[in-house]
Image 1 (cartoon, protein in one colour):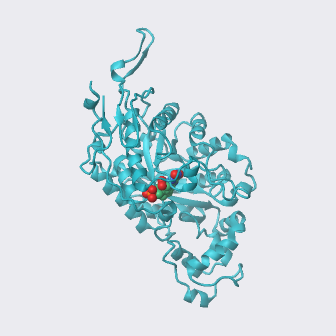
Image 2 (cartoon, protein in one colour):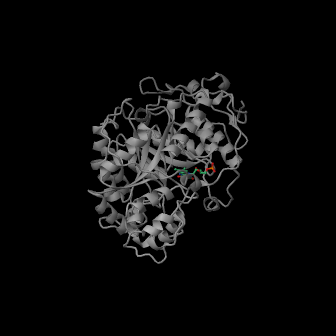
Image 3 (cartoon, protein in one colour):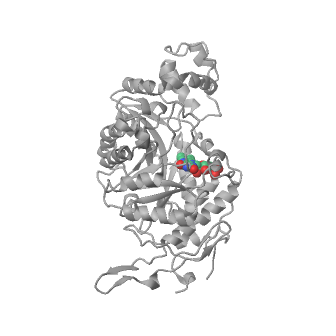
Length: 498
Ligand SMILES: Cc1cc2nc3c(=O)[nH]c(=O)nc-3n(C[C@H](O)[C@H](O)[C@H](O)COP(=O)(O)O)c2cc1C
């Protein structure tokens, strides 16, 4: 069969890129943090259930002081055993997936006092985890800018085989010259990064599909190892990447890994809308999350896909304890060393001077009457709301008003309420959870939040299958999805050749 006649392998294209997108954390700072903590005890009317992923980073937790907390092994940064234990804790809670971010590589600006943010190597970490878990999905970030497609294809497919169909690839374009410097280059333009990303994902999917579904026979009696006519080169060449193929790895139990994406720009919407089944997001308000979710769903429609095929999953940071006071004290223990610089920043968020204020006292009525939330930081309104509740300056900061995602500091039911409110507002299809300290924060979520969600019918009680596609309700896939290669809104850059 000619490669051009193979199902799924139809001339692909690269959508036009909007080249004027801001960098990573500008997306993270969109929207206003407004947590709804009202208790609602209703079962989801639609029967729709949420997804939950665990952010697995440097081995300690999402808060800066996590590595120094009592009970934490200070060597967790290099301990694969600790990652396995953390993954097993999430699997006990029936989380659908682990999410491992990557630069690639780590930023070491605070190395004198803080651990770098990332895993030593995301693929090796997940290989270790794959051998010691049986259900949980394994999603690693892999840069489309700093990797060759053939390397990505074989590493993720090998992980998919090793885990019996649980691998996911968070395909990102990477941002930041500090990352690029590790490769001796500057960050390419947005147009080039996204042009290469479209080509790379398509090429990787083509390589994953270069074995027919039933090509691998391994029949010892007949001596037929594989059907040669079902394993054929892909012969793809684009402006940025190319490969002859074929890949030498057969399909896994789910066919091939699932594509995730992380980003919030129009370019991200287009890339994810075309290829992804899940988006790792960042939103501070229901309105922003809903707008993001809709943008990804609309992009999916442009490629002839059902919008329900793409799940929007914003982040949530947690400090779970038996009551608010205990949780605030824990956050104080973790991050108090940062409070002087955070007070300086809080001044800007509220538009008032806090230099002479006592950290153990609430803001005065006069201060509160003139305070205005900054329009430059989406977290400011939430910070002002907490201040108006009468908390001390120390406790305002302990509420996590300056962090990368909405933060729950309190009993498990408050996290469950937040998740239910966002989920039922169609602002999220699930959440990726960043516990403050992994050593006990994952267990706290599993024991205090998961049962509440299950009781309300919002989260599954057990895994229905063993692959990541099962967990996300995504059909098995072999090669390129023909719908996304044939879109009306594409121009052809990647071409087949013999
Ligand atoms: C929630 C979230 C998580 C992200 N995680 C990563 C990551 O682990 N590694 C990475 O290189 N980029 C990550 N990114 C950055 C994106 O890949 C992208 O480079 C960034 O959003 C800038 O987008 P732009 O290239 O469209 O300007 C993340 C972005 C968001 C919003």
